[in-house]
Length: 589
Image 1 (cartoon, rainbow, N blue to C red):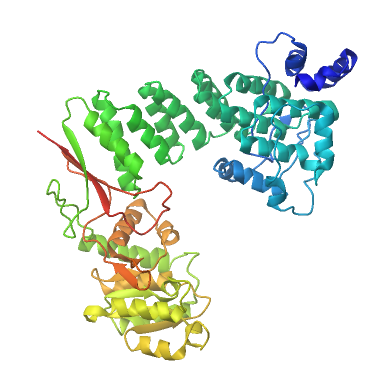
Image 2 (image 1 turned 60 degrees about the vertical axis):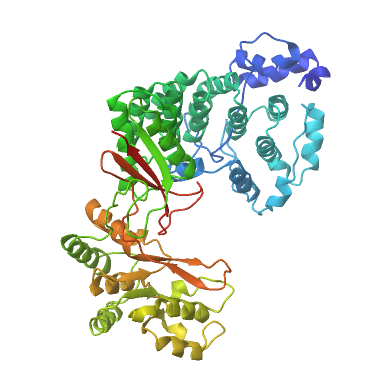
């Protein structure tokens, strides 16, 4: 940065400063260039980060017109979850939109789609550059119009020194007379990434003066950056500011919750947590784990009640903590003063008995009343209702009902098309043949739901193999465009409580069509106890199925015991496969 102005005259600097006054207060313009001229300043100026490249920030427009289109909340929420690499990808695909602080917005980024590879190769400089050096780099870049944007993304990805980023902002201000909102946000991201608290505060001050409105992406960064600093209470102030103009995001709340928990202000943390729930924002496992981590060793019946409530939240929503979260739960229980809790990792017996405490876990079966209620609701809401995921004609489904009623009951209902894709390197008919052979043992009555194209001889569907499979199971072939989940649910439920089903689908769409929370809860419980999971053998040559559990795989308690199923890794996605590993917590009296 020093080198940038070493060859710049005082007159040239004054001219540049005059340009910047159009957009920033004089004090801020002086701060921007204080590095070169040693102008006293409270703090060096900061610029920004990103998260929402097509921002909704509104520059102060003397004509009173808002030049930035609003973005839907769902789009903003989605972008909050994206990492730095996703932002770079969006830029390389030509999706970035420039903002302008005066006049109409610039044209959208290039019509042609540039390959991501060309942009990810950009290596930011290690030291601040002079304006002439930045200009040469820009002219040599394949698409100069987006040079600054791509370079800032690379700086964030490479965690470049702040002074390097400042020298680029100075170059932009000098050449354009303006620094676009998106570049400021990207600078903010770099500051947050490096924990540059004073820089973050300066960026916020500049944005408040220069723009009518700060959009949610920038607020996310500001709150996240400040909440991780000794000035975390300012993050609470910004959260209150956000509430006045929009619904705060989950990220906003969780950043503040973690900051309060980290500083042992648990009452404040729980207050924010309940406020977040009241706004229908679903907490992440990360913030739930923070509560257990920072409450370790603390006394208080109210505190225990809150944390027990979080465990019941996991139960009600069929959420399985990952291994590190499980350890946090275990350590918290064992740290309760005078609690005498001890935790052990275990595998529950097939009978449902815990080998550590000998407690019998809850049965996965529904009562007759619950089962009949669930069956009626599914037939009404999913099968005969307005379920948009049921793609079949009334005539076809009527034919299926007649087919099923004439052959009831079945022991296992199989989603044939779904199962046929288990092993991608094998023919589809071979996968289905292996699955049926495995499930047909012990004379189980099988119903396979297929599609009519399976009957046409092709590279994946051999007529001879299909004939052999049909000797081992009943088949119903639906139209090729039909969605067979409704067929599967109907046949399984009509066959009785003993009937299981096989599919790799989660069935979440159909569960969402159920009219009330109690029925959705019963559906999840029935699904856990009746959906057969499959797993490849060690050699990977044969299909192997895991039997449905006779005990319910959810968090459960008797008061002096807790049993918590957990996953091995954080990145396991939602699945019908329930964990087989458990944490047993027992209170010694």
